[in-house]
Structure formats: C-alpha cells, structure tokens
Image (cartoon, rainbow, N blue to C red; front, side):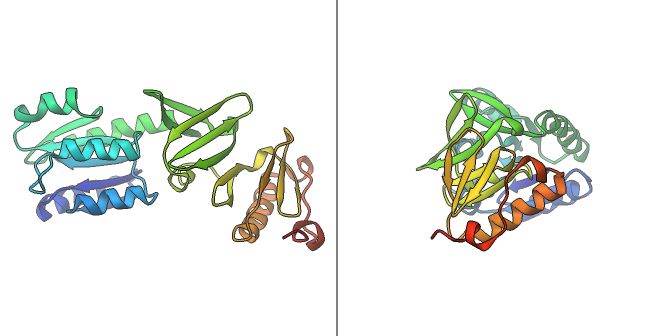
Length: 253
C-alpha cells in the first residue's frame, strides 16, 4: 500500500509517518506540506492508494478542495481527512466533496489510523488482480485477464477488452503502475497484455484477435526482453509465436 500524508504542519507529517511506518502493509509513505507538489506528482503519473488530507490549509483552499482535485486525477485513491474541528467540516467532507473513506480528529489517535488502514487493506484485496477505474459516475474493477490493451487518447485512456471498451479520464503512465506483470509498454501510447499477443513481426504486435499495435523504437528492447522473461517464467512459450531472430524482430524500422 502506498500512502501520502498532506499537512502544512511538519509535526503532524512526522506523527502520521511514524504510525504508518509501523504497519507492514504500508510499503511507502510520502509526505507533502505543499499541495501543488502533491498534485504535480499525481499529474505526472505517481499514485497513492490512500491520502491522509488535512482540512485546514493557509494556501487559500481547504483540504476538501484539494480532495476534489485529487479525485479528478485519481478517482480510485482513498481519502481520509484530518481536522481539529470535526463538527465544522463533517457535512462538507461527506456531502460536498468526493467520497471520503474516513475522518480523523486532531490530536491523532494511532489506533484509529491503524483501523482505517486495515479496513482499506481489505478493500484493496477485493480489487486485487483488477484495474479500478471511474467510469460514468461509477467505480468499476476490471479483471486484468479481460484487458487486451490500453491506449492513451489525449487526457483519457481507452481500456480495450475483447467485447467492450472503457474510455475514462486518466494517464497511461499512472494506470500502467497499477497493472499486473502480464502487461508491457510497447509504445508511448500503448500498454499490452502479453497473454493476448499472437506474434511479433518487424516492429508490430499482432494480437490473437487480429489487431495490430506498433512497437516504438524506444520501447523495442525493453518490450522484447520483458516478453521473453514473461512467457518463459509463465511456461507459455508454446502458446505464442515468438521470434528472437534479428531479421524478424528488428528488420522493420
């Protein structure tokens, strides 16, 4: 689990960091006293499973405003708000802002923090092996094995299944970090599920349904090595026509 803590007070950042670092499920804790930096990191494709967000900021906006901004970039991130005056913000948090997963009252209670993390761990396990997206107002968990490939389209990502497509807001880089080991980047605009690859020829991938996807020069070597390791490691070498020879893999420019 990757967690971000957003608060202007250094003391609060360190208190939460110490509590979270004791939990085995938490693999990374990032601290932000500047929300522009946090939003910039998210916009560049970084992601967090959970964000602890202080409500009171001196930067002209509230934590609820920042929560809305986070939701626009990564709507599947869980938000837990922190407030000294819970009664003042409780209505705004649960009615006006994006859906909150919790609310902590200052001073922070470590037991409550751990309780929220355990609860959210259970939620994450329910979506394990699935890509969680926000589509037409609903959260949808798509099994990895159903996804053939993902395609970047401006500020959206087209998630292509065998019989369906989901065009949703997001960045390909960020979604790629949440996918399983069967996915590989073959182009700045494409991530492919290697289980659906039928053949490589030149710098093109031919999927089992007949679709073609280009392999960029920048991704070529990484793609070749990654696919080889995957099919050998998964014992799928006989299920796919894979060409290692230079004339077939590197012949076309």
